[in-house]
Image (tube, rainbow, N blue to C red; front, side, top):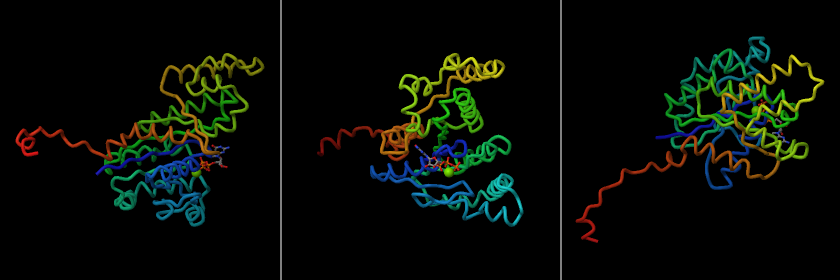
Length: 274
Ligand SMILES: Nc1nc2c(ncn2[C@@H]2O[C@H](COP(=O)(O)OP(=O)(O)OP(=O)(O)O)[C@@H](O)[C@H]2O)c(=O)[nH]1
Ligand SMILES: [Mg+2]
């Protein structure tokens, strides 16, 4: 039994759900199968139905209404409830052996910093449910227009990589929105972030912030692991297929599907019989 999973993460509105749907759509077009697992207790399905939905366990709307909590307190409650009822997740996932599951996660960064629920879920999926798991962290490409914002986004991607301890890809989403505003050469520098980009910043920014931004940029560079794959879900583009192939590589999807039989010793007698 083997299961492959990808946790799709990133700030609110980064395009996570759109990307999850694009994965399912692409998979269907090439005759592969994948399932959507919704881990956002406030989300409704969009293009494709959820195969597994946290709202069948608990919904943010009910929690806010019954416990008189705000949206963030309600979300924290929902995840604490899920943590105490992980057997629900086990049961839901139970039948999906040898399947490809895409986990659409909520955008609140608190869920892997303040209360580390997403790292706990990730570990549970790997250790107890035998998942070959990776994370895809989305950052919006329009951030690249504001370089300081981009580097702070890269820092949040890096923090997710460290906290989740999962094989990881970073994705620059909504590329269609910046294609016309930024040169290809410059875009390439953002896909493999180059701190020198900040050197070109205009002089009218506060020098103290410039210094801080540069320090963050060099930190991201020193870490040397934050690179981005471009994604454009606005039209049929190769970007979704390319990202899926990266996920396949990381999770060793092909190997999981077709476990290699140990090479059998050639039996000379069999050969004689043929
Ligand atoms: N132009 C463009 N818009 C996109 C793209 N991907 C997503 N969007 C839009 O961005 C908005 C947010 O997309 P979602 O997929 O809901 O983002 P999300 O990260 O799931 O949002 P939350 O779950 O609320 O955190 C929607 O209006 C999408 O249509 C893209 O590649 N290009
Ligand atoms: Mg979403």
